[in-house]
Length: 312
Image 1 (cartoon, helix red, strand yellow):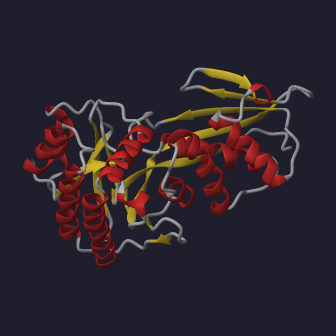
Image 2: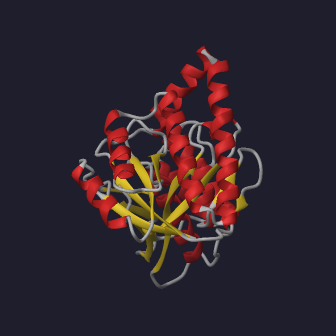
Image 3: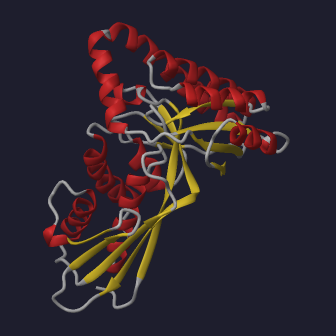
């Protein structure tokens, strides 16, 4: 193992369009939030100490050998060691993140990806995006039960991706960069619970939900074309349509709808919830002329935090 400290990071992510329907085989688009990251540092430790994991945001410290297989941080670490056919190193893995937990920004996947990158580098290997994605996906199963695979994909490549479950992701080349505001609703969201609830409803009335999922999938396809062509106003209208469909399957909340209306009223080109819903964040597509007004409107409407990110 490397005798010096090694640090790596991974971005957050947002779903631009295609939430929930992506679990059922329809396309979705996700983009990285490169300004918000998780960080992992590996420091050498005393011989015979084994690997110690310090998760600062969770206020947890434990030895890898003492952790169960259902611990996400331990699982990701063991998968990297298995992939590299490496013994457990004598080291301290320290993790911290800019990303709020349970807010739909991919905090769990980001931490897992950063940890895998740092551990691989400390053992002499810069792991490929494919391996980072595979490791992170296994960790996501603990967090979310039945993940679509989109979070681990966009975070591993840190590029916009057009994603259909079971197929190779398409890395998108954005024709015209665009700005998004991300506003936190103040309500923590459980992806596992939201996905399970939609599954239960789909099983009861699959015909209705499949029609909605088809419509959301069509929006994802149209959004892909808008991104490739640089027609940002068209993208804004598509984001609005996507949110109306997500409301139809019951995953938004009045607090989130109010934030979205505030953003649109202040001049956003489009706005929608992002992620699994039942809380978390909304996104608003803005330009130079509307950014300040929309940010102020979101704050006035009760968003405790508003972030800004450029895509492309």
